[in-house]
Length: 324
Image 1 (cartoon, rainbow, N blue to C red):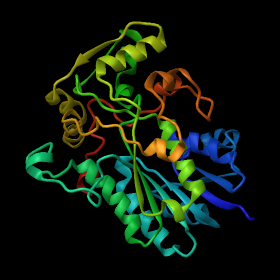
Image 2 (image 1 turned 90 degrees about the vertical axis):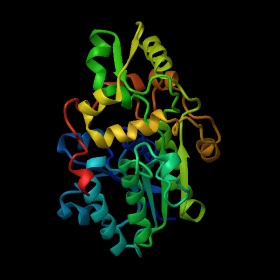
Image 3 (image 1 turned 90 degrees about the horizontal axis):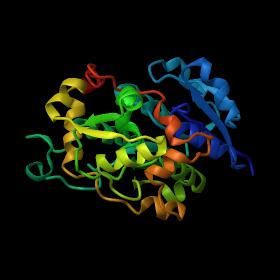
């Protein structure tokens, strides 16, 4: 049986690296991993990618070479790249005779098609059925579906470590971090688990997983104080969580992101989904285990904490995307 070529976008990201390593061990695929920066190409080959290719959602000239001979696509993109993703979906639609399956990374709560919302009960702000960022995630799914593609969406809870990346300096030097989530427990998810779920779905294919939507969460909801205990234990130090007001958080990161965080403080991300277990046959990774053990890419969650962060205090990364 001939191998299928799978294109892994965002392959140098937290999920992408793990997925490259996992699919590299699968004889059914030729793994074509995308890089944005040339300096990261060799690292993808070291993880086991068969091929590497330049890919940029804002540069249509990179799309054709990336898609040549591809039948399966893992699609992931940062929030501010929404318009580029929507345009790329149209390109995939032109190739739907070629593209058998698209697995899209999305977000828990992108439920426009699978749930109903009452703005009076479910809004995080008056007049908004769901936060704009979650509407964006649904648009990212819908754009693929509207092109007639076989789509599987992995709707993930908030990533483990994601909240803490803006506070790495104070965590390291002063032993504390802050955000507005407080005592509300959220079932934060390990990015390596998302990669494992994606690998299963890609391997088993669209006959089993096409037009399916899976919520991928952690094994237990945790408060910020509990997160501080786990991280401190992994680092061998005592860490303190300092509560932050939503007003201060909005001043730091802008209204669009603050609206999403209000959704988290309302408890919508507390529940633990069985979908990961049903896909893989085992429980999701706990936060402490994520921090202290290596994933398929050879990296611990503690090592990952100090890498790359889109969100910078004093900058509204969603300013332009909010106009999409």
